[in-house]
Length: 366
Image 1: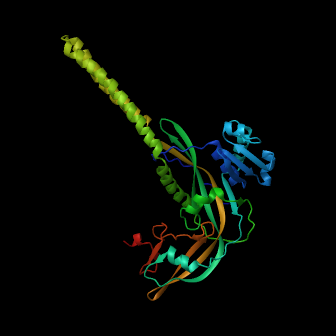
Image 2 (image 1 turned 45 degrees about the vertical axis):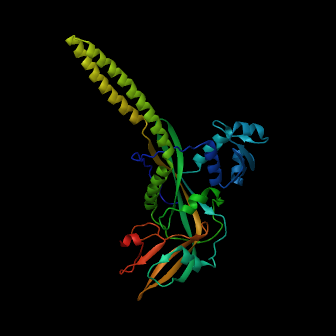
């Protein structure tokens, strides 16, 4: 790939609140799938793996049976136990690091064909308000690129956890790609294309990176609630202990103040009471700070998923003038992708013509 890599960028201003774990099973299976292996679950913490030819020398066999639990490995003859410090995990980490910060993978299927029910799909998928039914002017196959931005996120609170979170963006439209979010791990992809297709026009990679950052913020916050809820429970428990301790301490000092008639002793006790109150506020603030949830997120690597799609140019008639709209049929999704509104950039299932000859989403017309 010729695109320059995106800079690492921390996002300390987020306050997500979910626990995400990146365990050996996630690391190994994710790498093997991205490298072209077939990985199938064979039971609890057990996976069957069929390796591509280029990985066989590194792992010593074309077929592997990987167990990620000691008891499962002990009860499964012929399996390889994978855990921290194991040779297979060390090999996987080394290969994953060598895999590169930028990788290109290619669709392994045939070039897509225009579905017969396209007109029906158009009518149920999209609404072109105040227009006559759209007419298909042309269709062609072009190679779209769906970029997978893989962010390494470190969650810090009363404990530290780490996760790699992928965000998939349609390179042509600059929109989040939900089909890849669901299906990327199950795709069989190649490191070299076995088809020929003209490239589709791409948005600048820097712009796609900004979209991925926004999407990542939403993903992290959506998935983050358990850690924040746990942190809040532990914080309230700790705050209650701190308040109880200082309440008892202050009560003892006040009791001594009430019983004393010595002015010097009273002055010392009043100073001690004031210091106790100051110390309580400091301890309460320290406790609140310790249970806050923060995240540092940095771009770890980038994968360009090359996928031939069908581009469809529509002719739309509105009153006395015609409008053009290009759509993308995604064979992975098996449907037409929602187009992006040219004003707000968001996907929309409804477009409305303006007097200036644009097709905008209803929200941009308000």
